[in-house]
Image (cartoon, rainbow, N blue to C red; front, side, top):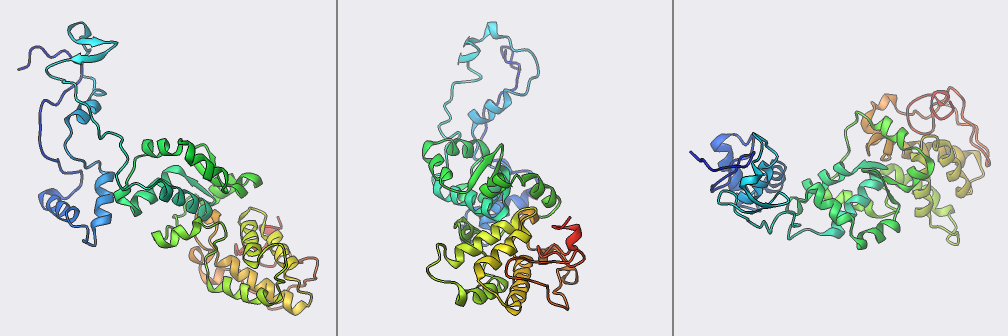
Amino acid sequence: MVEDYYFGYPTVLDGAGDAPPEDVGGATGFKYLLSVLADESHPDFKEMLWWSKEQYFEPYNRSRINESLTNQKIKKTEWEKIDHVNYEVLTDKYRPIEKDTEWDRLPADFDAEQFWKYIKACTHLYGVVPFDKVLEIFNRQNPKMYIKSGQAFRVMREAEWQKPMGQSQVRQDGLDFIHQQVMESGTKAFIESNGSGKDWYVPDKEKLLKYADDLYIEPTAAYQALYRKLEPHFHPLKSVSLKEALKKVSLMMQIETGATQAMQELINFSGFGSDQDLNELVGLYSNFANHSRHWANRGNRPVELTHRDNLMPLPAMPYEITEDSVKVGRNDPCPCGSGKKYKKCCGA
């Protein structure tokens, strides 16, 4: 029995070894976890390393444990019997002063530039993405660089971090990263509302980081067909490249009421004049829209969320199109690819 313990919270006096994390699966599961973590070539290594860190599985550290226990009040601390200054303990046989030099230190493998690429890629892919979601994706795909939210915020406050963000299309809105196009159009609420309840599309690391490129568009068959149609007619002396022009269309398409404007932009820079070319272009655009990653779908394509029969069908009769405008009947499928009638979607 300890008679001269005056703190109002518990204290660990001594210990050794690493306790199993929660839900590890008993002794057998813990043995398997340790065997996997000891072998980086194991196929489950990355997943198990990420999971173990999510469960706060760390080497035994008495100082860290006691720091966390100071929040577990069991009685009033008798400070008059403790050697302290402004409630900071100076000496005590039960709570010796131990410096935790590892606490909050970034992992040795941590790459701040790589973390920035993840923020940029996720913002380009989702339009609006919570900080916690970016951190979850980064940690899961890079468990050896696993960082906590406090560490991430510390990295983001550094001066050298602010410059690339200011030069990019990434903006911060509270605890969310949002694309500049979203901020300028005021469509954050629309994207969040439409994405609610949908699963996030999360590609593997190699595919995801391609979105860090400002001009990247997933090279689907629909995109390539549209590109091939436009390329022979796109004058090389134009102020922007065809890739840049299609990226502009893609960004316009993401906004709540931007589908019709995006199609008009496409027609304007295409230079097409014949009804045959323009009707073919509308069909290619509609297919491109249905196979594109949409911010309002949390990165999913319409074809991945809707049965094929409910997607935008091409009309039996061609759209009536002139060089200067796009005429869509109120009962026609909306060109944005939502599958709804035009009057109940962009034409509302």
